[in-house]
Amino acid sequence: MNTGPRIITVANQKGGVGKTTTAINLATALAAIGERVLIVDLDPQGNASTGLGIDRRDRAVSSYDVLTGTLDLEQAALPTAVPGLFIVPSTLDLLGIEMEIASAADRVLRLRNAVRASSARHAGFTYILIDCPPSLNLLTLNSMAAADSVLVPLQCEFFALEGLSQLLETVEQIRNSINPDLVIQGIVLTMFDGRNNFANQVVDDVRAHMGDKVYQTVIPRNVRVSEAPSYGKPAILYDLKCSGSQAYLQLASEVIRRERNLHAA
Image (cartoon, rainbow, N blue to C red; front, side, top):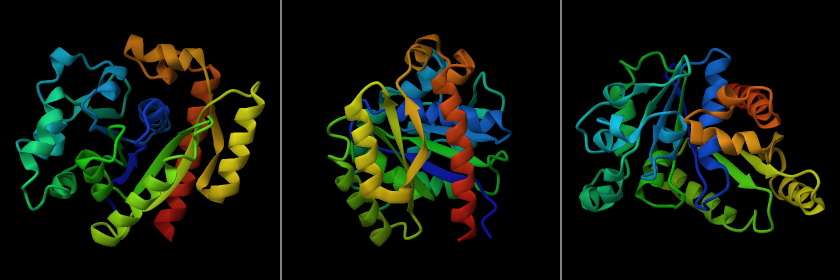
């Protein structure tokens, strides 16, 4: 039985769907209920790192160092203001990683190898969440190769289902070639505005297409959640009582239940 951390990659090749917001608030919610969590920021923009208060000037180590084999996972992990939550931050060095490792035989397996090399020494992490760039590039493929499951944030908008099929195809390709155990952990609907009839229609459509893969928890569009990153805080730390924070706490409980079912299966 695998006693290491459960590894979830948060991925969607579309930008602006709440991917990073979901990664940092889900991680914070998991830490708040007693889990020990590591975020690996694989997005060169580094928004997860900024949103957890890690200033760019303080990123002497990063996920770039992990992918190039310079540091192991624990050496690159920094504590955050949230007890039990750590992050391997991102730097702009990641922009050049594809060129640097393009010819390497293990180019898609760099993160998986790093995680496996550290598994005997990992600092008691129960969850590792990987925040991907908004594209299906080598960094995203690395995250899927390393992960147990994929969590997909999906914005409640007209083109919500557009592109989802491409992401699901990529997951299937990774399953067939590199990581046969990879599964879709779930789809979380984000930026929901209950006053908008069309948003309700999107929710119904996604549930009709994807069934029980869609979480019951829906993340509302919420000003406090949008404000929080500018203060270097996850929403749950910035305003615990706002509707967005409460939704992410519910999502964390749902993720844990789903992970237990996947683990038992």
